[in-house]
Length: 217
Image (cartoon, rainbow, N blue to C red; front, side, top):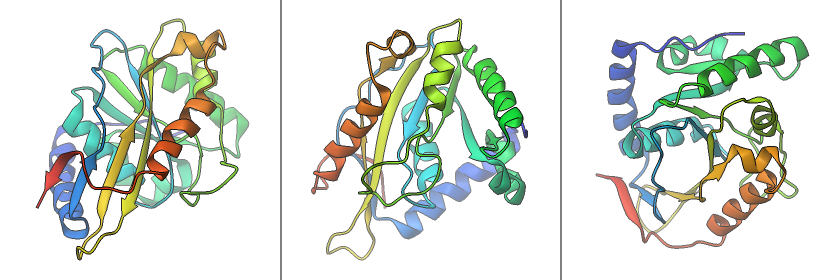
């Protein structure tokens, strides 16, 4: 398992690179609803959909703009070995084909969540799927974390999609769900899978560029 090694210089360089990359390929990044108020005394898991190569960039960029927490992203081990630089900006690995390694990753993630300054990004689908795939692939790693953590944290389902108009470059649209307390998942009063699907469904039916711009060229 590869642990994250956040490095200030690497983060500075990557932030400049990402700003330029997104502005080169997209016209605007639109948040179509309000971003919830994030508590300082609880850590956060962000659970985005996974429909493209861009997804990690989308969620990192938006969280950097909308939250003050330190960002950590769970990434497939084979990909992190290939793109080793991402380890320096907060990525850590998971190997779904190795049960023992997966347990180590879950323990490490629980350690990250113990710090209320941290935000951990986990893609519940596990791998890239088409935006409108039905049924969705879904892994219950976040549920495992909720059931095994001795400290509550918050969970925020997030949906992104690329939206084309008569502009040369497409738009990025984001819809965020309401915050869910991990205790609600632990006592099974809330189904994270249903909440994740509901948020994705809202965005799938949204065909407008109205909302708050996160960046604009």
